[in-house]
Amino acid sequence: MRRYNTVIFASVVALVMVGCSDSSSQKESTIEPVASANDLPERFEEPVTLDLIKHVSGDIFFRDDETIQDNVHTQWVKDTFNIDLNYIWTTSGPGDTFDTKLQLSMSANEELPSILALRSSLTQDIIDSGRVQEVGELFDKYASDAWKEAMDADPHAWDPYIREEGRMAIPILDYEMNGDTVLFIRQDWMDNLGLDAPETMDDIEAMMDAFVNDDPTGTGEKVYGLATGFTNNLNTWMSTVDWVFGAYGGMPDQWNLAEDGSLVNGSIQPEIKEGLETMKHWMDEGYIHPESGLWDEGKAAELFTAGRAGIIAGPHWMPDWPLAELKQNVEAAEYKAYEIPTGPEGKKGRSTGVTAQNGSVMINENATEDEIQAFFVYQNYLFDHYANPKDGGEFEYGFAEGYDYVIEGDEVKYSEDDIPGGRVDPVKYTLTFDGARIPSLYINTLADFARGIEPETPFEKKMYLQYPEEAWEGARIVVDGAEAQIPSMFTGAPTKTIVDRGDTLDTMLSEGFSKMIYGETSIDQFDALVEQWKTSGGDNVTAEVNEWFNTVSSN
Image (cartoon, rainbow, N blue to C red):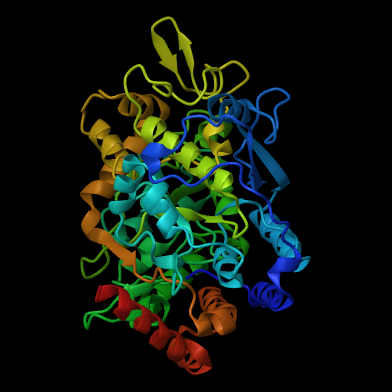
């Protein structure tokens, strides 16, 4: 479950009480509304400025002297549409730096940018502050057919952003199964020790024991069986142990569909106790690093990429990043993708999203018609031309030659070593983080490569060259093992009790589970912890979540 900061929420509510009109400087539009997407201009006669904010995360790089304010993407936007992208402010470093800056900006009653694209828990608070406008009707009128078709493929995409007033944020679509878990295991260690592919939890445990105790590196260096970090969640986006609990039929940190058709908190189900017992045993045996409970996802991944752990679990795309660093750090290191194991009763399970999205776009209540049209002109173009490019099209090989690809003779190259100055991905500069994604297009493409199918379309050719074979196999495992998915079913806005008590309830469980894994508290206290969660507001959350679920499941 996502965490929601009650302090942030309180500050946003205070803004509503102060009155948003004090902070807004009304701007006048230079153009009139049009009837549909077909009537939008291809390029604006007069310049249109879009005010923005952005977190420049650690995976965003620039060529030469370029910056987020001035780069190949901003120049393309200007040349193509006569739109100027104006970043009011940006942040870098940890992701919470952005949230803190945004919170302070709102607390100071500063004007929001005209277009607000976020991957943040603050999204819901901003919607409820009343400072953004209903966007559903705008999407219906101004979105292109290609964008609408992609959105229609995900029936739950709008759920988190629906209020009585309508649809308050446009979902940023992601690829389906993009976060489903596979195992990546050091193949050279397996070969050195004569180990076969694991199929069961017993196999995994025997493999980790061999990694820890039988010197798979031949150097005597201390290594660990599994790289994991669970300071945030047990079920998280990388370095996850969701599959451990899935082997017993459970899935923590999300809302699951019960046999009676209701939603239940996955963290408080009896199966979780079995997963915690397994985790404690692995901690006791030294199969996982003793600081795993203090590590986030990235820190845990560093243990694997440094060559000090034999197994890591996460999305199929991890061979592209960060696992590529392993071969840079450790000579002759090899790893392969494997399916998650079955538990003692033959069960297996991994978390998956019921909706394929990774953020949303809100539009300032004071945005002008030209700003609104400018955003849709920009995003429509990316869905029409970039999401699934055509032969000979502008984005046939990538976003910008010399940045994310180079052409040498008749050959297109995408690797870091082949591009002068290293590979830089301008798509990460785009307003919606990844340009435009059609949910169903990607995962099956990579899976087909693993089955020996050759690429034909520009999209397929780019994916073929851009992603390593280990990612292809990971995608095939995910697609072929779809029956192991345990979807996270609550996609609505945070309920009243989640807003009021969500952080406290989440912390109660996460700290209690961590103490059990470390042996500081007996796992026999699991039932008492669950009861404490229920009486402290958990039962109210359950009722509210199911009230929401009844409304969407009846539609």
